[in-house]
Length: 391
Image (cartoon, rainbow, N blue to C red):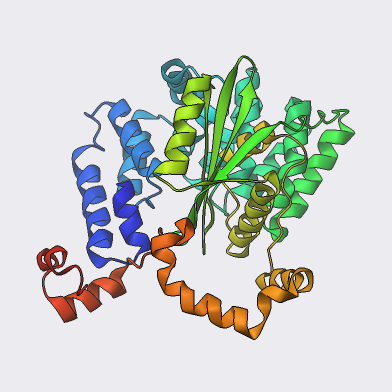
């Protein structure tokens, strides 16, 4: 399904039709009262993990089944945390709230928006610190119609004291990751928590990290990773950014031995032609793509909070990089690199870059427009590999 989503992003009609067909089939076959709810949860989580937008027919059928079982409402009409979250905690045995982000967002995607706010409010009111911290992370909920409602609900006098010092620190740091129009509601929540006597936890110390990044590929995507000590072992944290979308993914993996780290570095620098870079590159890259996402109203995934805290220091502040200003700064530093003769030389040599420059090997064009061009010039897709030079 992730491959289908990649094809949808490349505007391939067959992928758009296939995603709809799959979800219609899921709605028909799986979202029925007689099917185990765990099967339905797994399907929702698979769609969420693949970042496929839910089709209305599947959402409607999921809501109908949920209402049949009263999965979303307890006896008094509130969210049934024992049913919804108890099984998730039991099955996943989460070490921190980040382990529950994807399963809970997948489940919430088929709930009415007011029901999602009620569920998150119930988490914040919970006696379990893990669930309270999870509720705070939901201020980065992917649905713009849900996020302001969460901030308003959390500001209730009975709830603000439920926010921990760590939760307050995260709220302060994450307010810059939200669109500007949504920040006043979060600012009001932060003020209410402070007036309730909660003091913000200190920022995590800056970690010593080794940073690697791939080149941008033809789809506009780039991966960046860093390794950091984690007690007696190591952690790998990663971010995938994409032009036009912002922060696409963020993830982490712990418990790595030194030999695991060496193997992963060899894979990154070998198969993916990644380069070891300065930490400042990672800082500016992520800040730029947070800003890029916010321009289309899309804050980053809550998993980026974990990546940020493993890196240490203050939370990223969105800031677009201006290519013209960067080039002007380079010209001022090294004018000899921008003479007319050097420019001509660079253009003459550019044709050989894919053969001799690692950063150029990952470039490609792959979308519906290219498909149409190849069909027009070369015929059926089955003929393309045999006519690769012409393609």
